[in-house]
Image (cartoon, rainbow, N blue to C red):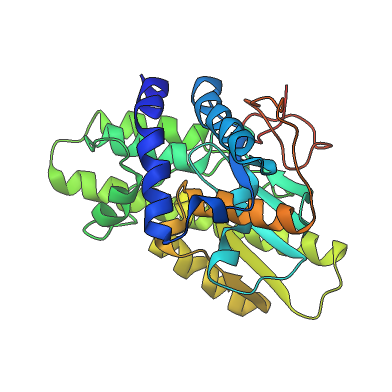
Length: 304
């Protein structure tokens, strides 16, 4: 169904983008398209269109890693130089990476099970909020008591930057079955939000130390990107941490935290400058790690 929807709309979307840009089709210098990671049936639609479009225009084609789009998304509204520490938080990925340059990533830590964005969406579903319900959790949380429920923080006290959210989801499931009032929903949302904040705060602090061991930069930078980076409370908590640890906090614009074409175009532009073009037979990749040398862990975007 998703792939069919992609096919029905892609012609119109591309035409609208060209019209809105005020440019002529002949002025296009290259075509960039997401090649992974993700659902291969959906990836194939955009990838095939991008290849055909580049071929028809006789322009270079650039296959882009969706995760690299998130990693570079702050470049859309700020001057961001390498290296920097990245916390990628989305519905499918949660990981810390040292970004050394375009295409040069070192994973410092990752979720060992579920992504934080998935935990938000599953919690929202248990509270009766329609998908995608993650953003609504923050709204519910403002009306609740964050200390009402004591929720688990898996591997919270273990060293390193790895994270876990599966146990937290299970605890929310058990409590949600006992909820009878709207206020209790708000309280659970607030307790969940607080728990996520505490996990990300502590693990980010550990990642800061790991990053500083690897890099001797004058000014350390911490980029938080991905759909969950739009959560204002998480932004506030991590900004405060950066002030404590003398890191510069950098976030994409809230409207560009989720999946978007602009971030893919940004990667395409960076690769175009370096003439890093792709072949027209470049395949779609369901799994495509930013750090290809990192060990496989679910949620890390690492190829099986």
